[in-house]
Length: 312
Image (cartoon, rainbow, N blue to C red; front, side, top):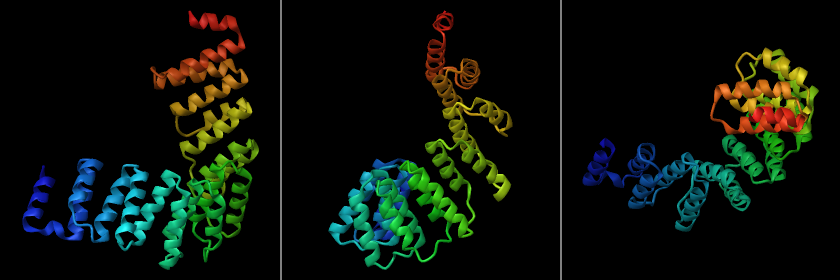
């Protein structure tokens, strides 16, 4: 392996002691081998500089090892390693993954002490982390302290945090406030507000927001946006508009959409549409057991005789 040969050369010449070379080695092993190889390499390196630590934190984030990031961050504090804004960014991302509110608050204090509280990338990550740590009040407090509110990512993070907490009313209220500041929403914004409509059962609002994407902002709805609205209509039992949406979509529905529709048909006893959704789902994935279970349950609940025929 070329990477290992280069590592051996670096060790032979002593270049591996350089902080940035050691960082590159950690990153290389994570990309080419995996987290274990990167970790083994990291354990052999000098750890007096923040750069290899940041490289290892990045490797853990890439491999979705949030708890490992927080463990390493704790070791950095114990060793007195001076952290950078990059270090704090990785630690905050780990808080989001691990749901660690206590450490999130500790990092917040560190950030304020370092005078980095106005750095937009960190502020947005704080809002996101607090939201995922089930402390949306803290997220909103950070947002309110921002000197300006002209960044759509900040609005999205807060709107999404409330939507994920099931507080759809506040999500939609924030969206209206965002429009009042003349910040233009993007596709992520609409994903969150459509999700809020789905949580709140707001069919008319959901349809209007979907249409607003292209009508008011020249945004082309993606399959994820259609999927949320399809789920909203299905839950409401509005199968007329379900059919209209399916026929007007510029792309073919995916498996998740057909399975979601099957679930809605089962809920409302719509055997005819369930049969159509089942055929489409099986066409996309013949071995998907969920489709078979949902359609048979729909048949059974609607008409036991139909269920017996289907089983034959």
